[in-house]
Amino acid sequence: MYTWNKKSGLSRLALLFFFAALTFVLFADGKAWASGFASGAGTEENPYVITTASELNLVRNDLKAHYRLGNDIDLTTEYPVWKPI
Image 1 (cartoon, rainbow, N blue to C red):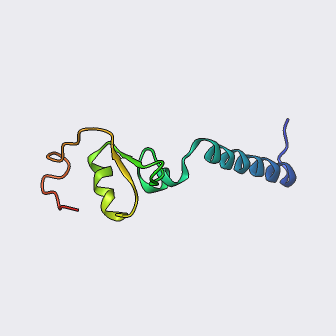
Image 2: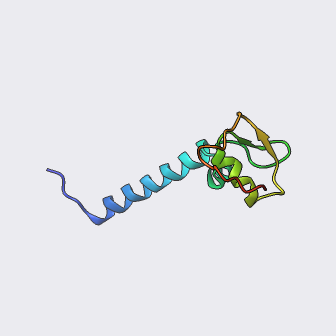
């Protein structure tokens, strides 16, 4: 029978946080993930790729970033009254 003790619990918790942080660093493009874009970093070399109406709407929040259109976007369903950027 396994008994829970404070030392082993803290070790397991530290290990869990370590793997969560490692996963984020290895697999997430931090800026793109935090910004709401599926890919890109907003730089000239690695622009944000706009593929949805929601992503297009996010452009108004950072007009100095670099963008590339990745899909045809239909605004009629999600944004029937589009406010120009």
